[in-house]
Structure formats: structure tokens, C-alpha cells
Image (tube, rainbow, N blue to C red; front, side):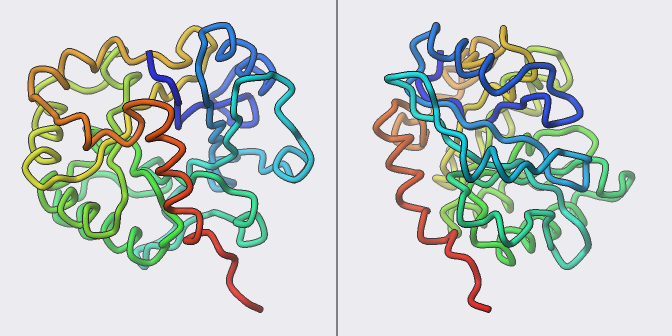
Length: 240
């Protein structure tokens, strides 16, 4: 079980099926210390809801709610669909390849695009599901660039649990992270309350590769919240 889960979808995403309150309640029942609700950006028809970001306060004691977004890449320049006016409310910013990016390109194309996206948007904290089979990347090159930028690569439990990625691909990702020293974020990518905080599918792979604990940004609650605070200055809205 993850103490702080950085990747979770409510029904403000087209793919989530629960309210924020249901997700928070489940996280509290499980004893999580923190939960990030990171619904999709508007390019995947995510509902970017200003009252949630500006006015909603976590009603559950002993659980820290993190507000964020799983953003989409808009173009080959590496722009993302995070509305600039929402940046000031973001605790954590995720980005990953989704249907907004054309498939059937080679690994060089996707690797270059993701690295360009990281460098164009210093607010990005975590690259989601870099082991997505539809968007192959050079893991070592991506991990090296992520380390330079201080960005974590995600180890996505849902991809493994639902068999949407083979274990060997995920092991190659982990070996690249270990070799380069790139930081890793273990995330559930929960779309249903039974998935919140879950890391059962990926824990054996971490052990198999022997990832040092210090490379895992959410190895415990203290390290997870420290990661958030270390990167908060990167979310300063641009001056008009």
C-alpha cells in the first residue's frame, strides 16, 4: 500500500467513476496519508472545475488532499493542456501520452517529444505510464533527462494489474531508472475506489530490480510531501 498516492481519477475525468469525496473516504479508510486527485486535462474532456481547485477543502482528518492534473501533450512543441490560470492551485502536475498524440511513430519521436515537453513545462513533476506500449520510448534516454529536470517517472500499478503492459517492458523501465538514478513515483492510477493506494502488482518488480529506496519519491509520506514542496516553486504562474 502506498502512503501517498499521486495519481487518481474522479468522475471529473471521462474515465473515472467516483466522486472526489468517495475517493477521499476510501483513502482514509485505508490509512493513506495523502491522495492526489489528478483528473485529465481539457483535451481529453476532463472537467477542469475551478470550485474544486479554489474552494474545496478536504473534510477528512489525517489525510492531505493534493490537487493536480494529468495533462496531455498538445503539439510537437511540447505544449500541455494545463490552463495557466489553474497553475497556482496545483500541488502536483502529471503528463503522459494519451490519444492526443498520434500513434505508430518510432521510439525516437516519442522520446524527443516527452523530453521537449518536460523542458518546456518546468511545472511537470511526474511522467505517467512511460511504459505504455502504444508510445514506445528509449527508457534510458528519458530517465536521464528526467533526472536532470528532477522529474519522476511513474511506476503505474494499473497498467501492470490490468495486463496493459508486459512485465519485461516495465522491468526495462526500472533498470533504466536504476542505472541513471532517475526518481520513481509509485502510483495506483486509480479509476475506481478499490484501486486507491494499490501497488501490489508492481512491488514484486521493484524488488526484482532492486531499486534503492531513496529513488522512490513516495517511499513514505515524509518523502512524498517533501517532493511536492521541493517542486512547488516551479508552479509560479507566469507574470502577465
